[in-house]
Image 1 (cartoon, rainbow, N blue to C red):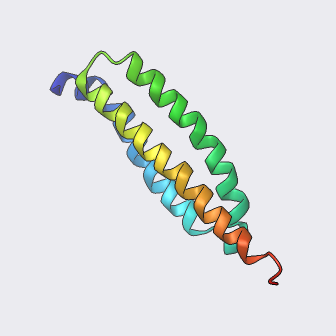
Image 2: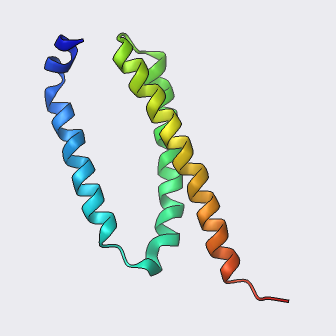
Image 3: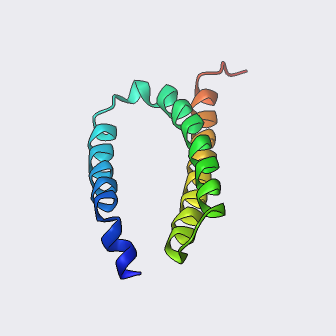
Length: 97
């Protein structure tokens, strides 16, 4: 396991950097753009789920299998949660009877 981490240390640094950049970018998005951006994020996370399933199918190490499973679970939660929030926001714009 330790040699797996040593081999992929640059990827680990890249993921950590992407987390910080993503948090910074999302924090500066105006609230008017959240619904269209969430719809786009749902589509992107559909691709992430497919990629995660492929990674799990070709996993050689236990850590790869665990990270692939975690990516599938979190991607699915993000897609479902995004659709729920988008649906609730669109309900606010409908005319009341």
